[in-house]
Image 1 (cartoon, rainbow, N blue to C red):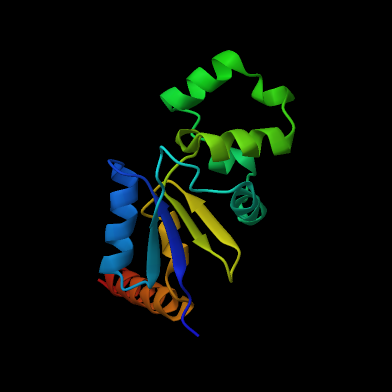
Image 2: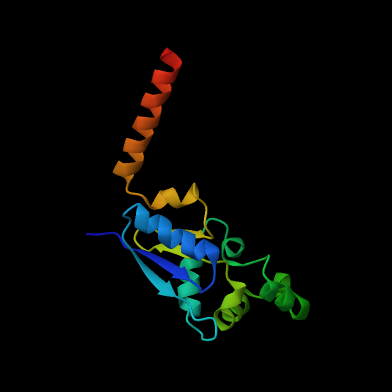
Length: 145
């Protein structure tokens, strides 16, 4: 069984392009799902799946630094909204979401945004183990000098 990472991207988003590029360069199987920001591409149910896989809840999903979130916050009080209301707002306005979203359905892993270090969790364990062994070997050689 091949593990397939779902990568939710939006157009003209550097972190989205970086994630797709990194996964391609590292031969990690993935499917890119382009979120159309003028349509309701993501459903509330999908957002609930992301939420269940996240480490920090809505903090992992929301684009706090975005103009869309600032405008939303000017007219709404997110701290006093129910989870359902917040997820509905996010489904209705995909600009509120921090992209890209990398989702491994089987492992229940979610990463939002692009981080060179954090994306490595999507590498197969054998690859990560091999890289660690190589790093330790180099370190041993350096200390032996």
